[in-house]
Length: 235
Image (cartoon, rainbow, N blue to C red):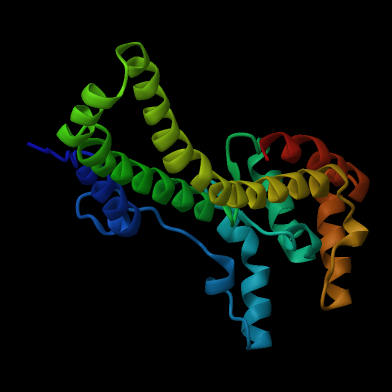
């Protein structure tokens, strides 16, 4: 009797459920988040300016800073200002700043889908093909006894390694490649960071930001060294 074991399905369902709805579960501690793009007005310039001026207040009462990084992040002067202000308030970025590339969740989901499908194929092909009575009878009748063990090894290795893992792995590698390219670009940006390369839509804001950074760190060059060394260590 063929028995297909799907014991891997409940943990996968729990993972997907927690991933999608975990923040809604009652009784769990809720974390308040200040998301600058959503909490600062993006169209009304007066309200936008008021929100920007209060960034220091929000950062002062924040325990952690999560940077949702994409290649443009360190080219935006206001993003650099947020990091500078948070570092000045908290001093130690190693324990309070997390840099998360935006493609990392895509890689995580692709890994989950890859292993889920591989487990499903293994659970179905094993009992119905490799371990089936028909296959066992064919081995007993047509395979010489000295070749039975090598045949079984080659069958398992060929089907489950090449068919289930290696060939689909080329698709998964594409997601890994995207993530590693982002990681390399992030480190290059941090280790070669320069304030004058950061874009600012309103040039008058640049004077304000540079003045604050000089007050906090003693100069723009000193802050650039902080980014190149301390921030690069946590990336």
